[in-house]
Image (tube, rainbow, N blue to C red; front, side):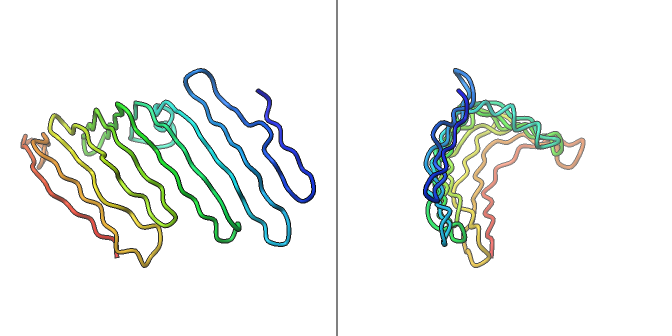
Amino acid sequence: RPTRLELAEGRLRVATFDWGNDTDYLTLGGSLSLGDVPSADLTVTGELDLRAVGAFAPGVATEGRALLIGNATGPLDDLDMTGTIELTDSEIRLAEPQIVVSDLGGALWLERDRIRAHELSGSANGGTLRIAGALGLDTDSEDGVALIGRGIAMELPEGLRSELDTDLRFAFE
């Protein structure tokens, strides 16, 4: 469908914004106030094939599906952005170090000042992997992310095949 925006009385309203096809789509709705204090009241939804991510990340190949639901509200200089990205049967392949994370499923919760992993788990090089925690988007955040892995096959150091069990926690202070 054609995209249609309407401008009236200091407000830009999204009348239609539906891009995609039967399986991959992105829709946008809501409006922007263009008055003295510009503000937004927007919603975005979409379902995407993750293979497209590989085009923007050299050395990384991705597969699977992602469902996106997001909101942006408030003044533009203090925008409150929230939402969810749900992953289904996803896969991430890194060339260096050689890692394949498959059967990845769960959600990333987008909060005003952090991204939180929710029941995010899968397989990594034949072992199990679980990701928990949150990544703060401001410098004062004390959030952290934990990677819990069992039986992950690696070649560390190069030429030596090994199996890794790990409980890594990354704290961002």
